[in-house]
Length: 257
Ligand SMILES: [Zn+2]
Ligand SMILES: [Zn+2]
Image (tube, rainbow, N blue to C red; front, top):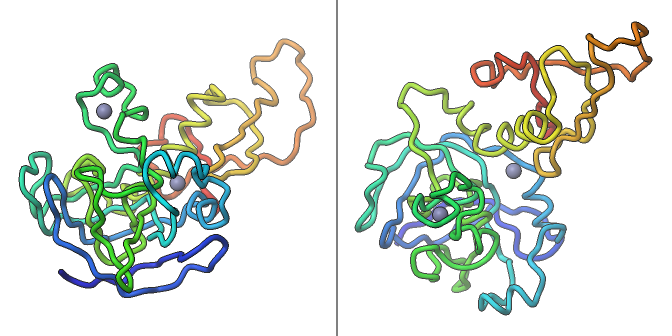
């Protein structure tokens, strides 16, 4: 057993505190990751304030009394430093980005290209480890939950191998951390949900990756009206952290944490 520093919330509306946690070694199909970058997403605050807490009846169904105490953080990147038995997808020394929805690659949803609905995501906000339901983190003899089966607000993290994605060792670790939540949800909301196309003028409202970026189409350059409609000042910008993935769309909704 080792110790690790982590930002922990011990109860509803309690502040984040730096605590020294006891951490068990990685068990079956689990890995230890030394965190390099971790982002502060508003979903972590939603968890602290109860806005995305699982209902009591759901917690009871999965045998969990409370979501607290919890290690925050569900976006980040790091280096694998230890692997448990039967780990096949990563090795010691691999660079990884975390995934706040684990993906097994074999369930119905994963096999049909909808990894975001993977069966393993059922207990992503509460509960023990994916592998066996027990806990690896302990504080004063009490088991500690982890945000999204991760807990990136820590020097090191023990998680299931399906909760990370291996990246190239030369990939930008900062960008990898942002892509693991902020870019995926912010960029995805705009491009997949709002169907924004290059050249359109948009209003970026509530640019929070947690709530989804609400981007409204205001005016198309090809509009036949020939008259420019007035619109609020538009913030079209490209995040300096995502030039590679957002080059074609020429803009990105930058998370505002
Ligand atoms: Zn997030
Ligand atoms: Zn799956």
